[in-house]
Image 1 (cartoon, one colour):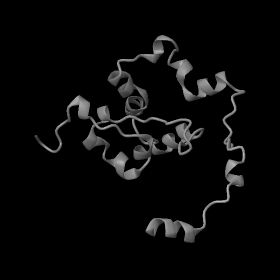
Image 2 (cartoon, one colour):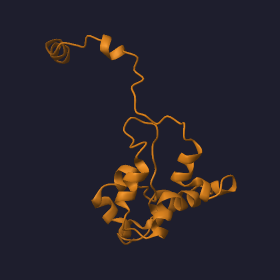
Image 3 (cartoon, helix red, strand yellow):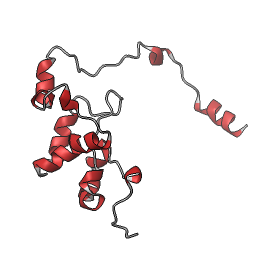
Image 4 (cartoon, helix red, strand yellow):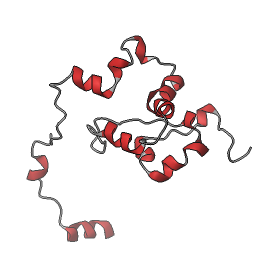
Length: 135
């Protein structure tokens, strides 16, 4: 099998947001094949780019053809999972702008939900940690 041959569907690589935002990974899109690339946002994890992820992706894909953007933002995932989200919400209602406009009071501010548990912790002395590690 050639190094450039398309992998079997089960082995098809999935590029995540972190991979696409790197110039090197995006440069490999032709070798990987756009049918094997998808952008996802792992919201609401602490390392996600929410709420600015769509804008960040827009910068990376600024020069991409609209049909390529459509493939990696939703069409590939729809095909892989045999799922059509547009049966319940139209394409026009599903854009970032439309979804944001539909929920103007939704709070997307970044704030700690810690409640102070880390502020109350005393931590560990480095010498004690070293002693435990070498005991």
